[in-house]
Picture 1 (cartoon, rainbow, N blue to C red):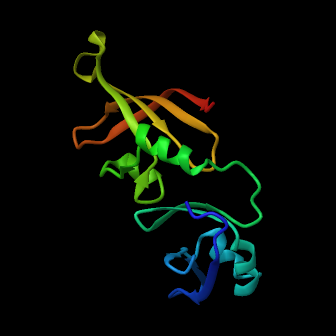
Picture 2 (picture 1 turned 120 degrees about the vertical axis):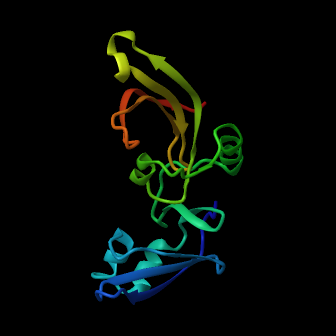
Length: 176
């Protein structure tokens, strides 16, 4: 976690001439925002210097050199302590993205989550279509003061491997 970070902003354009913002955090970690991001779109109405002033002093959370999440310099909300982040990484962890269809719904290369339990469920009255998997997952974010838990049911819906996902229960667990 980079706190009260010094940020440099460089502006460029993509192939379609849309503005693109690239930041350098504390002189060493870089991130290039896609032209569709709110940060790059801000360059349509702000100069790079104005954007830099907005981002300067913010908090930036990198995983293996890749920006995972951030808050700009004006953010006054919740941020976990470094000790809290270390504890969450130890208990819940950071897992790489898997190759499933469901992983495409999330941005980034990693997830701040852990699948704690996966169990097979068989519903006898459903014959060949009665095989389900249940999944209990916990996830976290350094800027959110709760842990999110999800209990999902995953079912194979087609012989080509396509699955359906239904969330049966989700809760936000406050940290004390």
